[in-house]
Length: 93
Image (tube, rainbow, N blue to C red; front, side, top):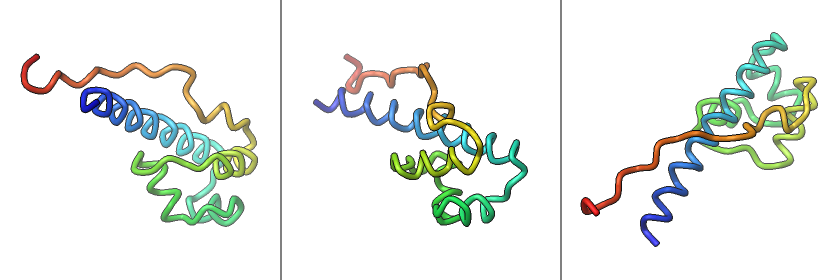
């Protein structure tokens, strides 16, 4: 169970990072500040900063609101595949 949780945590972290990067890129393409996007989407700028930096994942409703404000589809903000290195097994085995 611990090994599964370690891999899941690494995968979740990578997904948060990739979604955050996509949101930040889309926001910059739209020439919006975090404050402007936060105001139009209803996502607090501090939450948006955490999202863009991969510290938190967006809720589904936030993802759709952000996409609408950024002029894209919610699926554009989600990677279709994720490549990451699995953490080494604990205890050397």
